[in-house]
Length: 221
Image (cartoon, rainbow, N blue to C red; front, side, top):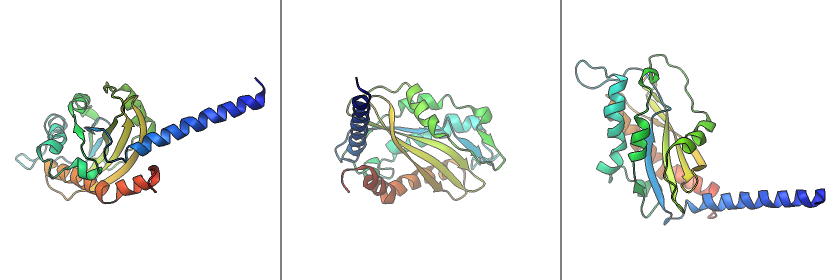
């Protein structure tokens, strides 16, 4: 095949692949899009500062956070659906909630390295998100989008939690886009302040982030 034709064919294939990917991303913003919420992943997170339990003797161990707090936090979208409303957050007619996979993933949290009292910087490398999606035993579902929230830092010293909200193609586990959310909290013990940051994260998405993303990725300009 002549070099010119080869280049044109390659360019055409790349363009076609790019347009298909754009169409796929755009499809997420349809109100009737099929979406599965898998939950909040804490396996990449770092907790900075003390974990106050709100009871005597006052401090919580990382193992307690893993075994008691994390399941509680992932259950909020089910137990308090009206308050932590995913359909309103992502402008969807219906979102399926299945946190069983993330419950399994979170059981692998490394409690020895989860907490530090040093106010360090901790980040999730972007490549880690796609790597995690490919390695997780996520069931492949055609014509469906998945959402996993990756917790980056829970900083009790500076009173905020940072997250990466990741939307992926559930048919092949490929990341479509991720966006960063920084959610403040105001003192208190672990469960209340962690619950507040999740609610704040969802409110930020509903009030501004979703519309900004829709303008960026959707056909609806």
